[in-house]
Length: 348
Image 1 (tube, rainbow, N blue to C red):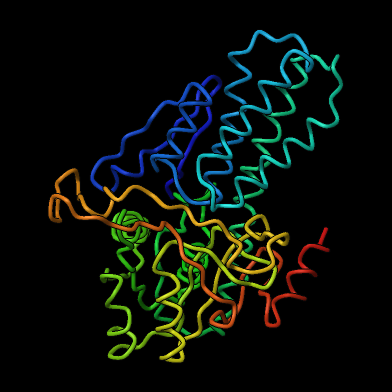
Image 2 (cartoon, rainbow, N blue to C red):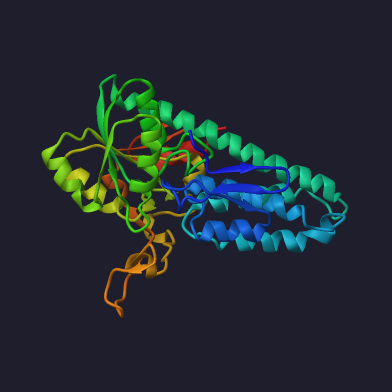
């Protein structure tokens, strides 16, 4: 099982996901800015993986500071948090991780030694990584119960596997758990334009584990559902509002509409850290607009008229009424999602 990152004593190694599946290139990040740029340019992507990478970015910055105590370091720390927050505005896992580490900082006094600060931030990053892996495995276990012991043909969008998390995966973790129980007959993989995370990364992970799959262009989902048996759609999420509206990789909304028309259950798999109970509904979720070049070019080659314009939203929002259930590490949330999400945040 591949992982997105590996923290060493003085640097963070990130697998360059833009180069997969044909090249396995690892990038050595030795500063917070190295990690921030790697998040922005999608060397590392996937909401849980971004959050963990950001936590280790804070660790890296402590290695380059000459501060003696919290009083000398606090301004730099908060500027670092702002820099990391600006890298990807939609994925709430990043914001939740930075909020958590700021809560730890609230316990420090001006005289808290810098050695203690380093230890606390490093411990936080390691705990975040381990918790994400544990949560993904729990999500997979709960999601696998949806099969009821029957072999399934599953459709998915984007990449939500070990490359997008600390390991195992969310939606792909459900597929992985089903496969481990002999309950996957076939996986339909949306290619996921414009970065092709499905055809490059999800297919790469499925092939590595011998899980049967086929790739389709995103707009072929309706054809596949009409002409072939699809038992379940399972996708990940980057932010889930208090009412269950879900932001995920662009194309998820249209996939949910197609699934609804063909009576195919549509599930979202995500840890509690992806929920944002402060946002009441999906219209309040900020949507990242990325460079038009990602649409107008492929591998640096222009594939549209020279002066063409393009819109490139990186995410869209699927209304909660199109979602059958939300698979979390605490179980599968059923409708009505509002009360279920409130109860989720009452869990220890």
